[in-house]
Length: 123
Ligand code: HEC
Image (cartoon, rainbow, N blue to C red; front, side):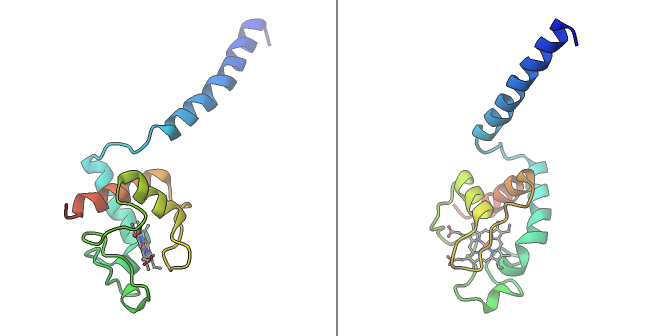
């Protein structure tokens, strides 16, 4: 490895993690129709059983739960209803309830779900 290649290599080692962490600090991505569609599909896989087709908390499993799953279009969210807050709740869950952590779902899918919920939420 000559000196220039070494310098480029070292620079990449420093710059790449910086770019990755900047991305993580960037906050919620903007809502786009494509992202909302992606979120709708991911919601049907991960959330629908409890929160239901209409997001009203009456999913096939959710209707029998205590506490009941939140109505995602109308209820107040105790952990906050901003995009970043819903993202955090989705990622970490609500301890002591059946609201599980979905940190294993891809970040892009989680943001999609957040924007899907926000697009249907009554203001
Ligand atoms: C196994 C059932 C179940 C699944 C699956 C589920 N939830 Fe929940 N969720 C709940 C319950 C129950 C609550 C209400 C908990 C409480 O009363 O504190 C809740 C509450 C919430 C809240 C409100 C939190 C607050 O701050 O009040 C949000 C937002 C939410 N869920 C999003 C999601 C999303 C997004 C998914 C899919 C990725 C999902 N949930 C999947 C059961 C579920």
